[in-house]
Length: 207
Image 1 (tube, rainbow, N blue to C red):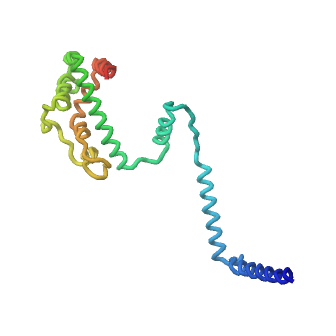
Image 2 (image 1 turned 90 degrees about the vertical axis):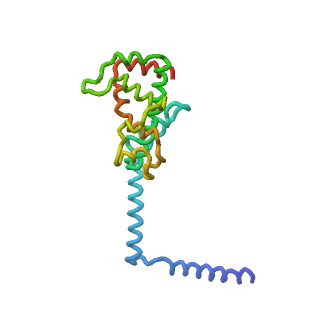
Image 3 (image 1 turned 30 degrees about the vertical axis):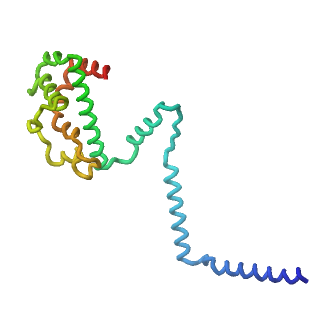
């Protein structure tokens, strides 16, 4: 009796649930549902195609073997374009690093007493100060702090944007980056001296 009574209840309950599911199922010929389903299918196909276009690279190697370096280089060469804000931020950092390196190298040239080699170099063919004079300017402004910033060309206009003095540069105002813009000409004169290559090489070996 108990089994006979329970069977109809289960049957009727299952039938009610099945009927409810049928009622909730969208009609096969509903244009709205068909369009929605087609849109989902197109999005899935588009996502699948984009995923297939991706080139995946597995880098294996021991620690300090250059995996991160290769990854960063690949991203620079083939990654998304850098925005103007990114370029300005990188410009601030690079200019600051150049001034730091030149300050250190000039100090090493002085400590190794190699300035005399610069006195033998003539001025550039197109005119301008001699390499020794350019070195003296750098020492005065970067090491001895005896140079007057007012004597240098002060960049104006958008140039200040490349030293971090505006918010979109991504960094706060950086004095080394500003000094680079002011001293770029004398740095270029000193760096292009042929005999000075030996001076820089010795300086780098001692750094």
